[in-house]
Length: 615
Image (cartoon, rainbow, N blue to C red; front, side, top):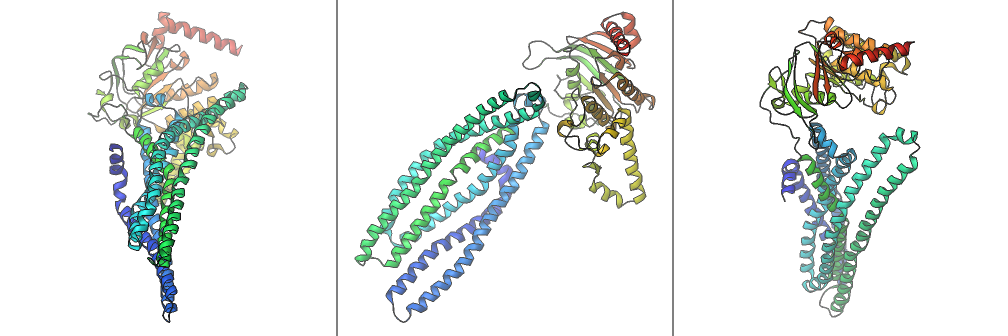
């Protein structure tokens, strides 16, 4: 009941006027449906009685039937519109809420829930909820209105026949109650299997290159067949229950009709009831049986709807695990970042990934982070960016604990380039200008153009040229400008799913261009030069250095660079060397070289490798 109450409060109450009007239209529809057999019975009685007024009376009743035929078309259509349209709107809002909620969830949540499952909930389950409140809701309300009207008219026609025909129908209804309970459990299992099947399909499509390169198509097909076979067998069970359960009400209705014809026919012969009344009663009975049989067909929609509603509600009620916001932080200028005794361990880990990290990055300065694989470099960046929530009182931005501020306001001050660059399946222009309201589908957005055109056309043209120049500038800084000539449509080339049209190095450079385009006060780069050659690396390092040389320290971003290449870190104001989560060395590049520690050894080794490559 709590689930239904939450759902009604959040989504359905605003549509109560539609549902009330829809129920009124259903009442009108069923009144007409009940009235038509009564008119037909009256017509038969009039014609059977004969006499000079029989034909006139039959014509009057026929005209009434035609009018009611037009009325039922209108009210039946309105009843469906009033029920189905709110269901569509509810599905739309439900998907928006799910999408927004998932955007706010942290990385540990997605480690526990597979993408295929979430996609299934956002697509299949929301559709099932829509069918529950639309189609199934209409049928349930229709039964609630139609059955009493039919029973009233049947009792008014002949109470004795009503009692005789209801007995087999009640037997069929009890059988359907047992079927519903069993059906509900099987539907829940089928929804869970469908989520696993969706996840398997997405996983195979994402890794199609790996599957082909290792000639593992047969293995992938066999695993898919296993999930598909399980889903098929469960669906066959559901179909069997539905196939054997639903005809029960129809059969009980035919039994009731047989009883009516047998007992009612005898009473007509004895003159206890008129033949028209028997015809009316039989039509009403068959109409009510068809309504109950239709309710049996709604069984699947009701079962799927409640299961889906429970699954959707479980996602929406999952807490993001974020600490409460108790402080404000607007990062408009490069801030000071400070780490005070940062120690971090993953929830399922046995050892600390980071241990007692102390450091300070002044405004406009650059911190370099160096260390071998598994030393905690990426984890440190994730904690500063709050991709993972750090312990309270360990990371501060301009003296404010970042765990106490709104996550969106913190992220708006950061430009982050992750180790694995992600590009959307759109144009290169829109990927670089991500989240820029002035760019839409690879060109200036229509909304921004309309707004700008109302002010000054000259300013509009100037702004467009300025944006284009800025875009070209960051592409040149990311050493991506020369690659545009090789792309079919240059900046307006659609890069494909996850940037499949580009090489690994081009994807990294596009992600760096995106960060430079955003020009945020905090810039964090996680080994973004790992997939580029040495010449391109040199150009990109020079571009990162120019962020300081072309600006004073008040406007240059506070920068953190993670890299396994020492040449990338030479210009940093301070470099820390991590090993098993601890800082084992710190200082400038010359200071670390003078100590002849791990950093100096790696630098010399990488220098020798570079000479060997050029030899």
